Length: 95
Image 1 (spheres, rainbow, N blue to C red):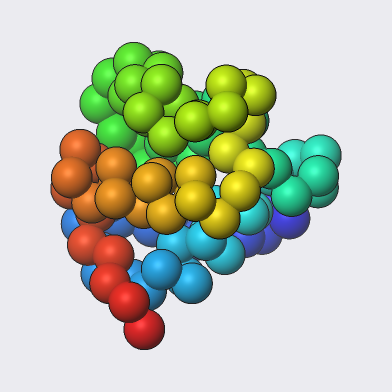
Image 2: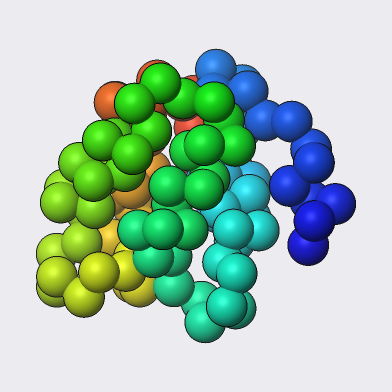
């Protein structure tokens, strides 16, 4: 797990949706298949994105449609991909 996090991922790097999901799963510390706000914050921190805590809060407000505090469905993950493309300026494309 720690080795995966050592791989440097640049926010402007192009990647597929599947690569984005795989990268995000490396931050699922408790292996429950869901991404919590804290796990998302760690992922953004790993990208060295400015205002990561604030952007994490905005992302969760935007994508967590069932207000569970986690990204836990395919629909919410799709929303997170769109959020990352628009607000984090990540280049994510369909494979």
